[in-house]
Length: 607
Picture (cartoon, rainbow, N blue to C red):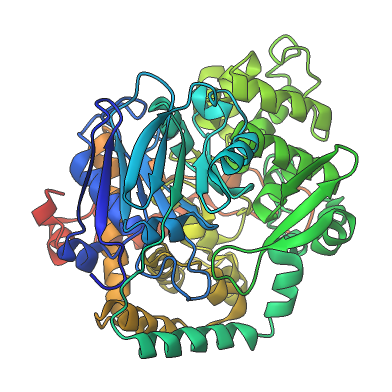
């Protein structure tokens, strides 16, 4: 099948049975790959009510038709499972080199099912596939482990692995790859740890069949030329996502002290040029990338090296914790990578705990003696280890902000910054209504990568509540996830302004199937509705109330910065949801109507 590895690999960790089957052509047609394959297998194969950390849950790793081919940024794959953090759909995108090896090994998806009774790692060398003992690897840090496996197996093997946090059941543990790339959100690493699989090591040497080699070369070269000719290329190569810090600080979107404000009075110390000058030593890109946003840093004070920090980490464990030193933020980044913890959720949980401490809800008796004030970096270092080991206060925070606030009470729920149980990523949304709606309705919880709509807020008026804003959010929720299904990075489109219409010719040349962008958006819409039904199936009384944001964004106006005194009214939050559900073809409670499911061909799946 052109553009695909051609096989679905199933690994039953309970029995040790390993099987391969051809990738169905109709699956590729209707769900394309990547995120689409993950959502399909999750809904179809994981039984209703499955324990996210039990053997019935599955971890599904999927590449896309562009993955591993010479298309800019074609280095993405998707990890999907039932989330232990939220109880709903989890989908985490991973960059780097891993997805190319999946394709070169003749695979499209790797489905891990069951659970091993002892630590193992999955070894894939083309058609040689084995479960190997990982008893001596269990307990090792993710960066340390990847180094060890590379030395043992060879640099050509690409590694995806977990750290101790996943082994210990931290509900937002990530999967690490290429010494600093992560499938970070929703606890995909936690599920891997529950299955006792420490790592996947993969190498492939097979070719990926292409329908029209001349057309593929022409389309690929045109995309690379568009990247090269972009005015945004040089600054993006130089600063990567750190260039976003100053922009967010200036517009009032930089999370500060648990999202109590959107501008950080010491923010300039975390701006891209400062980080570039102080700690960055090299640029680093993913497979086929002409615009490497990864920055490798040396931390002189700590004697460590780390990929990063990128914007989300700077926002969530820097300004959001009141920490202004770039090297301190990068060291927090390193500790999270090594222990195997998502920096976004960790930053959200620790910021909540700091606010609880400063409000007197938590005392030093609750914090294991830590003076948990905003800006106390040594306390953060200690707390990250405690979270990873589930010790003391760390055990409470390891379950995520929503559960921690529910257990603690005393009004702390009002400043638990999350939607559907997932900590909000690094954009303050007090009066940015399109971005707020994006977080409210994202299909994994409060994550920005499904719909980065804050630029539209600035374009048409941040506080405006209108049908066109809602339509923009929905359009972004179709376009951006289409890249996750193709197996390519969206940043060439977002940051370098590469025309979306340049992708369908490349996809057609590779697969032999003609698709317009409207066709791709329809596949995205199908997957979006399927994941919504997964949430509804797995959570009793799921609906509108699950889409509500933290009360902070409609009750607590910032007192400083660009957005001081600005807020979105609760009535406008509800208006946004009303308009969104109507445009989606959903009920007033946020559930897809039968006619919507019929139109998208989902009734046949039993949704």
